Amino acid sequence: MKLRILLAGFLSLALFAWRPVAAQERAYLLGVISYGDSAQMIASEYEGLTSYLSRMLKRPVRVEGARNFDSFAQRAEKKRYHMMFVAPSAVLDANKSAGYLPVAKIPGLLSVSFMAPGRTNIAFPEDMKGKRIGFTGKDAMITKLAFAELTVLGIKEPEKYFSSIAYYNDVDGVLAGMQMNLIDIGVANSGLFNVWTNKGENMNLIHAGKGVPHLTFAVRGDLPESVRRAITEALLKAHQDKEAQEFLRFSNFPGFEPAKLADFDGLAKTLGIK
View 1 (tube, rainbow, N blue to C red):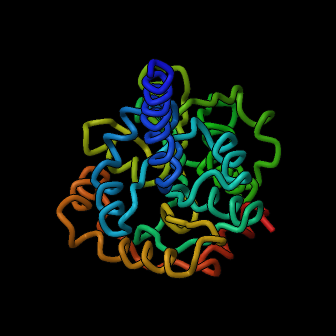
View 2: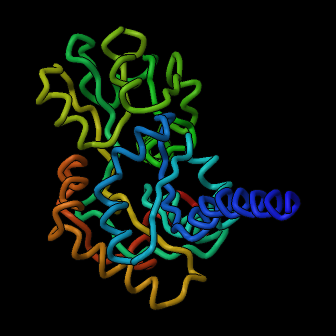
């Protein structure tokens, strides 16, 4: 009798322990680049979107952040994510390594901007010579676009052209570097120039690069076509849903528009992704 009770107890514990794991395995995983934010912060930021997608797909969707582009690429290569919402360069890398397919993107364009505090009197590209410059991560798309743009400007050896080159974890670090006089020139996406000046920062826009596609949503190419279609349709209707609207308002995004691989041909050529 005691043996039966013990066996029943062990079976109950095993079933209890299995349930969260099984639920976790059933969940779709959404990959993003978190720039070091905690898992709790990322989950909170994307809650409106993941809740909406979970409801539309009838399957839980949870978000996971990778600290930088390199760690994200390593996970994508192993097909860890069912879907991703990242800079288009990361989608192109994931397409090349693991067959991910873009399905939707934020309308509009991203571009790189070189800017400097007004007190530096740096206003033109030729004024940058010999100055201290700061970028986000070495592997970030905006940083790669910046170095491509420097080549266009005739600056083929940046390490010799600038007196120092610094890299920061995120754009907040770039802004802080300029504010604290650690760098003379900050590099970020063009939209931030308007954001920062609207917040009272006295900035000179030195140079802006050409526009490339905005943040992009991609899915694993080996997902059933019905699932890929359901994800795409849900994203294109996200602006009509109250939960998804919370995410869009927080991120200052208007919604999603359709995307296909050919939309990124120009970016792939610029970054040398084949």
